[in-house]
Amino acid sequence: MLIIAGHRGAAGSTPENSLAGLDRAAQLGLHWVEFDTFLSKDHQAIVFHDETLERCSNGQGKAAEHTLAELQTLDVGAWFAPEFAGQTLPSLREYLLHAKSLKLKLNLELKYHQQPRQQLVEAVLKEVEHCDFPLDDLLISSFDHQSLLFLHHQAPQFKLAQLYEEIPNNWQQQLQDIKAVACHVDYQQTSVEQAKQIKLAGYRLSTYTVNEPKEITALLPWLDMVISDFPERFL
Image 1 (cartoon, rainbow, N blue to C red):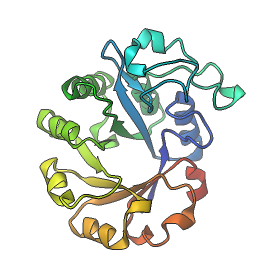
Image 2 (cartoon, rainbow, N blue to C red):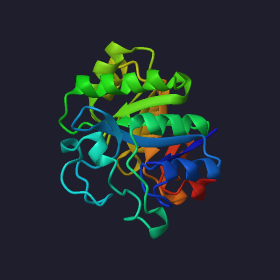
Image 3 (cartoon, rainbow, N blue to C red):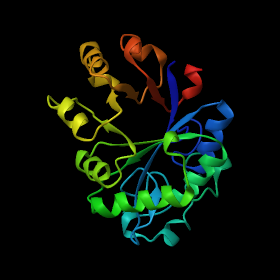
Image 4 (tube, one colour):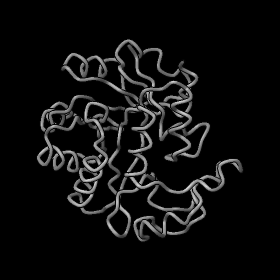
């Protein structure tokens, strides 16, 4: 059965990577949500996508140059729509606990913004353990293969997915190296033959960020998950 996952929560109808996005995903009846995490200045795992604050908050500068306490004084909702004013930037702990309360499964993307990989991975592992988040309900992905390698060596019990824009020639070796369960690809840069090969190699195949069903007609027979800003268009 094809899984429809909300991209950055439900980024077409709520501020991306917000707790409101989790609420929206649950209201839509989704089972999966994708979101992003990296570290604040004081090495706390935060839920945010961009390296800089301007696009999705009323802050300025690099998010990683602010402490968690400073980041949580920002408004991350008003930029999207007035009714979301007052949304605060979630810590990973807050996000995990809220998703757990809503019984949502999560695709956590490790964002590599030139921060120490070891600190990022260890911060994520600490929060997952603290929240007692079910590992069966968590998939960790990243474009940064080295982060996934480090995570696999530290905690081989976690389910991992390699993210690609353009699929490299050594994709199969990379997936084997992290014992990946899935491969996440850009539908605009993935051919039907590539999709077929990934599936025949035994991996689950997800594609991003698909906002119109007609965009993936050719790939659809090979897909296990579609990640969308507008998941309601696929329901």
